[in-house]
Length: 417
Length: 165
Ligand code: SF4
Image (cartoon, rainbow over all chains, first blue to last red; front, side):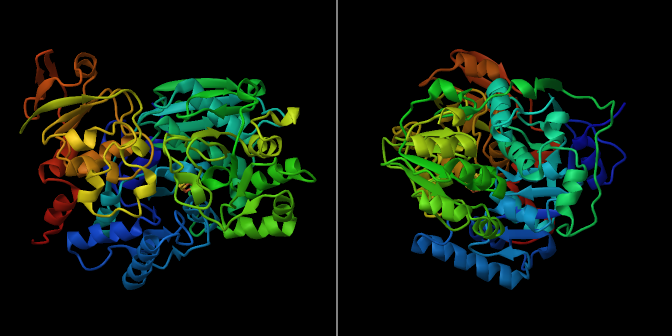
């Protein structure tokens, strides 16, 4: 009997011949990611009472959630983090302005095929786009990893999603992922390892692929993965920090469930307030007036996202009374978008371009909505209160839909602009 | 250990943004103050009226969303006795174990229990006793029971590393 991706990689990391779903294994992660929560985590670590971090080399710390600091409290938090990484010899530290942690983890070559990654952030599965086993954990667990370099993981059941055919022109991987979440529900992959297979994902470029595991956190998944191929290896060329040791599921692996989709039938969609699985075709909500459009985040703040938005916006103006906030996911994306002229396009259209980081995604700063306002956003979460006030509506959509809606002043199908 | 309290009942997909809003994650660091925001965007009454030992009953996917541990800490601060749900968001579930807050998967109890019911949760026996009936649930996997018994992951880690008080 064959094994799934999750079973094979966890067996390898635990040093066991094989493992079965439900089994609990103890492992040492190849990378352990934390962000602005490193300061409180360091406090918990100090409470444990060991003086030194067990494996400073596996920790990757990226300041991104409220950067640059909007308040003295946030600044204090950053300061504690800087002092902690210096004192503990954590060299993989990326300060304010480098970008959103999941994007930086990839750009800096930690998100690798066959790597086991944990992160004290729920969107850690993003690295699964490269064939890593990447899971989100809590703060105490990260503190315990600092002390012991070990963590327990339950071997998950696996869900196989096969996407046949190719996405039509103007339909993005965001639409595909939201469509699947709408179909399977917010707990459609609960506790599971979600494997994505088929032509529909193989034909996506690396940036478009990263959107899919990123969003699988919204289906309750433990991790999500796309088998690495030439596209993956090419992207990693010159970036990978360690030898690449891919893990592939066996052809006769046993899955809890297999679901198939036809990419050709997917259309642009939005997730309506206030849950990510409240998905509808864009045309069904077309005409919904918006106050703000947000292009950015670890989901859709990459160069190709900015490029597709810039193509929509070029030569047009953001609708009167609407704010368009653009936040590149990293400094690398920022520079590339600068060179390509996209940032000029945005600013000329009346947009506000902010420095790399999470921005208003979780309601911290740089464009939080007022009460009663409506936002359309490329982020991954639209829960009540997510962007700072519970009295505002957030629609999630692709960069194409967000850009077109910013111009129209209301939610619009890009083709109807 | 037996927990006794009143039921607070909620629906499906209660996410961590409504349990502990994201905007407080880097401005509120004192656990006592975290308790003052517990369930703020879901049930504004809760934080003023919850009593030690009270039991939260939720639907499926309770605690989905962000990994923020404050969503558990704020409930521990309020001395919530246990959470019973149809299923849990996985990081929230881990955070519960790691903070020794019983997170019990028991769909039958969720169907039966209503806000205001008086319940007794017996962790050893794996039973929820209430006027609506007695419901059973499986014990924690042995490998994680140790964490729970030590009073959470941090005391467990100290014990394991042989670090004294
Ligand atoms: S961009 Fe949003 S979802 Fe992504 S890591 Fe930052 S806060 Fe989380």
